[in-house]
Image 1 (cartoon, rainbow, N blue to C red):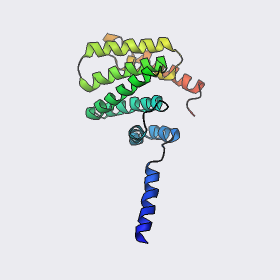
Image 2: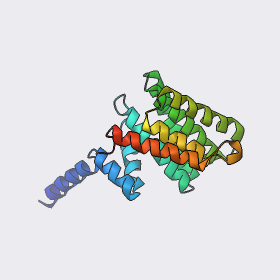
Image 3: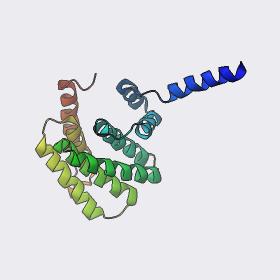
Image 4: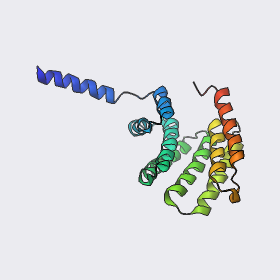
Length: 182
């Protein structure tokens, strides 16, 4: 009887642990700064054609979190995976503005994680951010990234905190207008 109970309990726990994480749970985790949920989603979800755009988005966010926590090893590992996913999504002819946005972000992340190739990676990040904005001026993710490139870039290289804030405000307006905050 005890064996049967333990077997049933283990099956129930396995089902709970493998349950699909919902967008609402991911959003709530973001609001609460609980990025372990994001890591779990990234690690559990198969990178198939259907899930690829969403996985890339959460990898993008999670890499930034790792860098913010000075966990460069984890950032490099997830960046490597994300680059593979980006290449696969490019083959599938994913959204051009988003592809360019991720190229920009990943160049900036690599610069932050490796502390090398400042000129090359910095130039790539800015070039791809500008191209992403040109490809879609109403994409809230692209506008947010453009804000990041301006916010984190030194002023002597064209960075501007006030211009970055303008982009963040445009991004928020587009998220709301496109009803992406619900």
